[in-house]
Image (cartoon, rainbow, N blue to C red):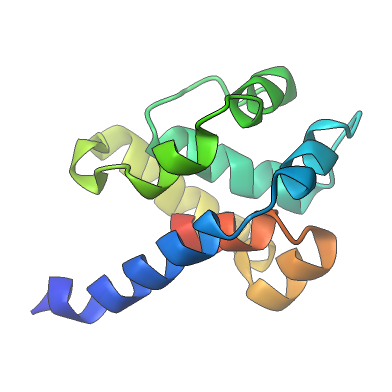
Length: 119
């Protein structure tokens, strides 16, 4: 029952991630220091995908991968470790504002779909 409730949200988030333009990702990568909201969202993405290094350098490296959107879209959420899931839940609570669509969309068009995916 729970899965049936969240499945449409997951599909919507995957579709949104697929619509991110490469130019928008490159714009984020070009930042010397990203706004906190972008860092928070990318930290959530990296943690869910099992990457504990949430430094800005590693975030840029991750975004520079040719297949980054496909990796996110095709990611199997069952692979998330209990520890990383807990860390992301804490991040979502502590930095809830960063994951609000209206807030993150104003900061970055590319990060907004990623925030929805993390949530």
